Image 1 (cartoon, rainbow, N blue to C red):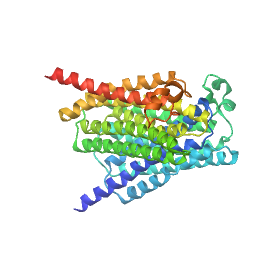
Image 2 (image 1 turned 120 degrees about the horizontal axis):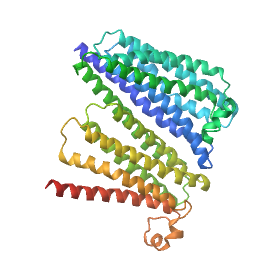
Image 3 (image 1 turned 180 degrees about the vertical axis):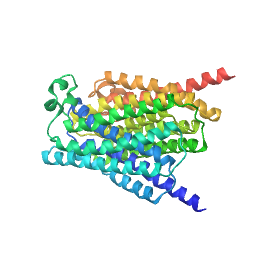
Image 4 (image 1 turned 60 degrees about the vertical axis):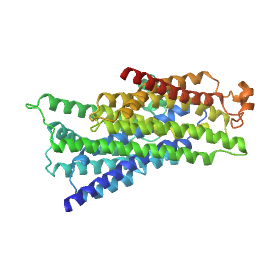
Length: 449
């Protein structure tokens, strides 16, 4: 009974970290609304900042999750989990500070973030050491990854601290002018200190993967899927699911919260805001529901499915940010949102379709026929939705329903005349997606009969 209770505590403390990770990523993306955006180039710069934050946080979480999935209950790990969660929720504040228009506030953010990441790396290394000393029977590859990540966290900690020696106001263009010429404009404007954060992470990720494969190539005997290994794979899959659930829930909540910033002067403004939110809500809920089927079909997620899910959460975390731009009272900012939002939706549809295809190919358990067909329809329907979203960009962002379709606006009382025609085409994309699902269901039923 005591052992069961310890396992429950270990699982719950790990769930806290997973949920707070989703919270920090969602709030981090929403923090971009504090950045002055007037054109697409500003969106590119904001996305560079968020992508760096997302990459660093996710790589760190993925490294520590492998060990926590294997670990037995330990009071020290319980405390480390809570400290990790406390530090993770502060990262959106760092992004907000780094995007500030005030130089002193911006420098404060560039000083605070490496300190937090150094503390996270130190706690990560400490947690890895505690797990390794528990003497858990693990396969060679799993143990090699734990050892490399332990060393990696120590390197990360030093890199973040040493990066503070680079002045916060020095950009990549100032520090590496010859290299910066070949980079996009958005990358040339980022601080050189941020480049110092990312480069070691990417290098170490390559080294870690190489060492893990070398350990597998030179193994003398094939590894058996022991109960400990299966439990580790299942626990890691559950952690990815908890993180994804947190991100999707946060995205829906932030989209609803964005409505409070929308200027509502009358009935037409209210209907327009609700139309925007209803569409975003339905699409996010659609992807979220099918992701549940993917997790149910594949008991043990491999690295490809894990990273596919992570990229899906990346696109979902950005939707509230672009949704907020669409609701902006500034016509120029709203036009930027009307351009970025369908691109993000198309990317989410393609990534979700890829995840569902992988889940279909690698499913490990038999699932009901109706659920299987639903997952197949979603996998095939995603590219259709993406094409229609991208095709909507051919419509001018400032073209309204009243200007192009005055008769339709007069006949449908709930359709505001100021509603952008591009946004109306998104509803057409959703209806086309549902139509493809229905056609696919009909064809599959005919083929099966």
